[in-house]
Length: 109
Image: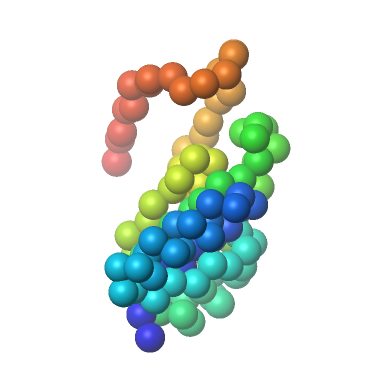
């Protein structure tokens, strides 16, 4: 069965995201962020969502690097966006102060 897999980095809104996906009549499963890529691949995901995580980016926890080989669409939400960037060799830096800041993003392939 095809489904959307949410990798939960430790926030309660993973449940909310999962609920919204199910309301769109899509099967969705929430798994811990450290679930092996091989196990996730067996679920035949048609997409991955990386959701939530620690408040500080330097407290970063990484997921299985082999997830990059699954070749499915991926979405990162909040800390999940940093985790997704790290999966593909990117990095993040901490800003002074709180709140959201606008930044220019450069992409090279």
